[in-house]
Length: 255
View 1: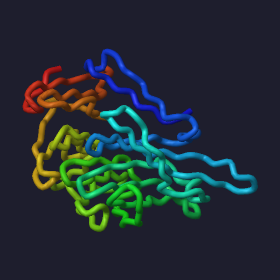
View 2: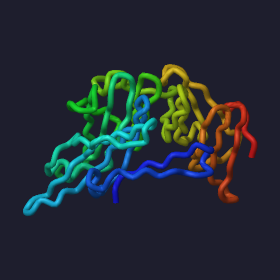
View 3: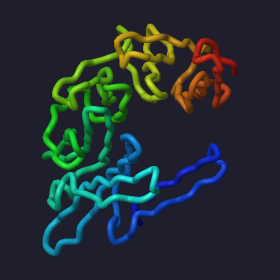
View 4: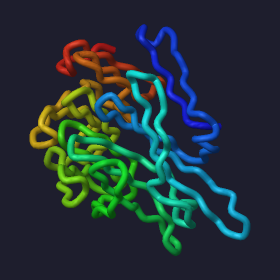
C-alpha cells in the first residue's frame, strides 16, 4: 500500500487516482495527513522499516504537483530510527511562513506531543508544545496554525510553534475545527451554563461570532460541512440523529 491522491474536476461525481510509485513510497503504516502549499499537495506518512535486530521507521514528506499530476521524491522528516518507528499519527499544516508537523511519541508510561517546524520542508527543528493536551486537530487558516488539544482551548501560532496563544470566546472551549477559506469554524463544548453552539472567526481567533442552532438539546453536535454560506450540522436528541442546514452563513438554520 502506497500514498495516493484522488482528484475530481466535476464536483465529486468522478475521481482520477494517482499512485506514488511503489519503489518510492514503500509501505506506509500510519495516518496519512496532507496540506496545500501553493500548487503542491504535501503528504506526511510513516513507513515501518524492516531492519534485522532493531525497531526502525521513518516519517516521510512527499509532494504532489497539482499541475503536472506527479509525485516528487519523498524525504525523511524523521530518519530511520526507533523514534521514527514509535512516532504515531503525524499531522501537518502549512502557512506562508513554512510547515509545522506534530506527532505522538510514547515516553515511559505516557504519550507526549512532539512539534517540528520547517521553513523549506527539508530542514526541521523542534518547536515548543502548547499545554492543552494531546492533539485532536491541526489546521492552517490565514497566516496562523491552530492546534486543538484534548485539554483546554485551541492554541494559535503565527511563528511556526515558537509561541502559542489560546483562542476562543470567553468561557467556552472550542473543538472540531473546520476551515473554509479565511474563516475558522468550531463547536463549543457543552456545559451547565451553555448549550452546544457553533462559532466562527474571520481573524484567526481575535473575535468570534456565535451561530445558535436554536434547539434545546444538541448533544454531540458535529460540523459536516462549511462551504461559503452553506453550513451543515448533525447531532443526537431523544428521537435519534438530527440535522440542520444554513444557507446564510450560519445566521439561521432549518431542520
